[in-house]
Image: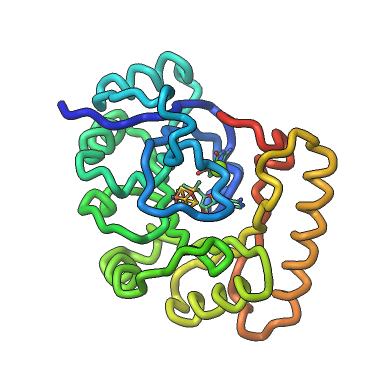
Length: 238
Ligand SMILES: C[S@@+](CC[C@H](N)C(=O)[O-])C[C@H]1O[C@@H](n2cnc3c(N)ncnc32)[C@H](O)[C@@H]1O
Ligand SMILES: Nc1nc2[nH]cc(C(=O)O)c2c(=O)[nH]1
Ligand code: SF4
Ligand SMILES: [Mg+2]
């Protein structure tokens, strides 16, 4: 079996974002990203600061670690990163999880295609708005969304400002039939002052809700916070 660069495995916790928010799940976070979003809350996966945490693990070793920390208290595993879609050989882990009747969620920004996307139960595609300083490859996004059934995918756009909001509208307009989520951006990813953070995030959530409520272009959408930040703030591994 081939090796996968893993930077953390944790859980059970709840999925704090997107299409299966609230779902009890384990997390496997892979190292490495082809993007470098200005506000990435998981920059330790790609900026070098977490390089000593990276373990090269094969699928059996990852499964053993999931069982060691999660025991029999999980039936869902979420794979995030970094960008797990950089890893061609992730199919080995996905096959093993499926063999063990585990449901699989995966988070990616939509910059790369992998054939194992077909085997992900809940694939969250999160193209990046202007505030990230990244540029969306819409040809790649068209390809990914064109290949996958609508009941397996969702789009999740993080919104920090008005320009991001317009970008979110453009994405929804391009893929009107794909379940669409707007997510509040956390622009204080370093603070340990959770009360202040949660207050800020609630204010931003309120701002985003107000905009969507007034907007006839965004009727069939969901507006969500990052639920885990309300409970655990910026803590890692939760
Ligand atoms: C850390 S990323 C990893 C997966 C993949 N690279 C991606 O961006 O979709 C997981 C999710 O967190 C979101 N995210 C990252 N930083 C954030 C922040 N500061 N505020 C809100 N959401 C954030 C991303 O947009 C993405 O939807
Ligand atoms: N609880 C929890 N939910 C999450 N949803 C997406 C996460 C991620 O970092 O990809 C994440 C995370 O790190 N923790
Ligand atoms: S694509 Fe995801 S992991 Fe990569 S820098 Fe952006 S938010 Fe972070
Ligand atoms: Mg996160």
